[in-house]
Each structure stands twice: as C-alpha cells, then as structure tokens.
Image 1 (cartoon, rainbow, N blue to C red):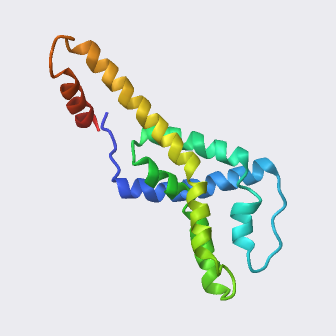
Image 2: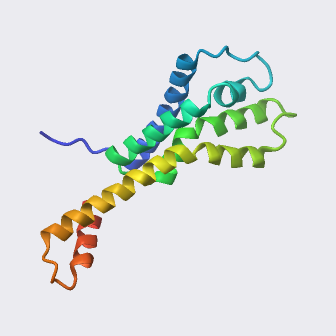
Length: 159
C-alpha cells in the first residue's frame, strides 16, 4: 500500500481549519449562547465565550496528536490551530475602524492561547526523541564511543 505524502504547507493550512472546527466543537459541547451581533461579534464568538479550560485541554490533546502523527514544528502547528482568532480580529479591525486599537496586546494574548497545543506538540516530540535514544542505546553496544552520535544521526534520518 502506498503512503500518501502531503506537503507541510498543506498540513499547516489544514490545521487552521482544524482549529476552527475544534472551537466550534467546544462551542456545541459547552452550550454557550452566541454573542450579540455588533462590532466584536467574531472575537467574542471565538475567544471570550468558548476558549475555556476545557478548550485548552482539547487543544493540548490536539497538539499531542499533531506531534505524534504529523511531526510538524510544534510552535508553528500550535499557532496555526489558533490562527483563526487573529484573522477574525484583523477582519473586525478593517471593517470597524474604531475597534481593536490595542491590537499588539491582542496578538500577545493570541500567542498565549497557542501555548496549550504548542506544549502538547513539544511534549510529544520530546517523548519521541527519548524513545529513539533508548532504542538506539539498546541497539548499539555500550562500549561503542560514538553511540550517542550514531543514535542522533539515526533520529534525524527518521525525521
């Protein structure tokens, strides 16, 4: 059976849509009423009402799964999962000229929203490195002086 290989940029684009679907999933699970229509409708819909502790845990698990299956850069995959929130903020800032006048602080907060999936991806990546190192230490004899170098080369080859 042939393995389907997707380019990484396509995977990152898929993560943006996956992040939107995760936020919509959390909104249905938490059963929070949608915000009033108006100036901050999309920001309120995506952030204030639905990004709770449960959503952070779900994004952490998503980061673990992404780190395990896709093996992408954890910081970039974590930010791609949250990228729909800055897009909504930029849209509101363009359409409503008086809103989002503190956008640098908003983007710092969005980076903090990206921490749970990033930490999930980093923890999975670190556990993969540890497993490869242990596997290589068992494979090569302990009296070999370059065991660690060979194990590291093998790990980089597997990436």
